Image 1 (cartoon, rainbow, N blue to C red):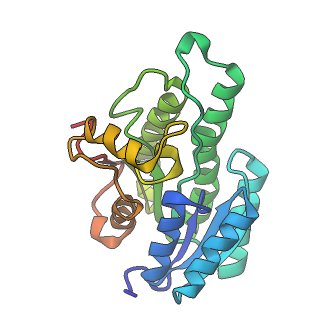
Image 2 (image 1 turned 60 degrees about the vertical axis):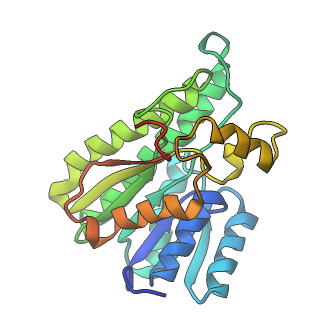
Length: 253
């Protein structure tokens, strides 16, 4: 346990698995009281259990980032329970089966943008509205290396949503730094989560595929991505505003 986030109230969305769960655990290990949020109650409850088992403090709130009323309720619940909100990691996101632009189902397009992009906007609006009236705060959004830094065929919906998250982050940073709110984002490459597997692919298959496409030769760990999130959220990054920190093993270098 360290004290980098002692006395801080931290909200993590998409915290039921993967990067979001690892982020919530890391903030708790560094002293924060963490509110974990996601659409599946069982998953976020498990995240809370893991944090408490490790000696940390956390609670769960089920919410869908694509629903404005859920984001209002989420931030109100965080503040009501704990008296404030100092740091937010907007991590919730989805990935759907790749398709060429000419074949892309419009319902899939809308679903991906609703969660990955509009979800970040809705979360930030509520977080900012609290933070700017209570001494400021820090927001870190999860973008991706597929989007603003790089592109892949078949990933129009995901890539467009994440490119827009990076741009939204940069503009929000300029809009609200005078309010005492620092906004940045992290753009992971292939990470050791379920999202990095192709259909039917084993761990060994994934490792062989990425060895030929990722300069560092391997998949990233959730801890490596979260280390970037933690740094951006900490006072160590106090002069970092509107930055997209790409953590992808050299893919988009």
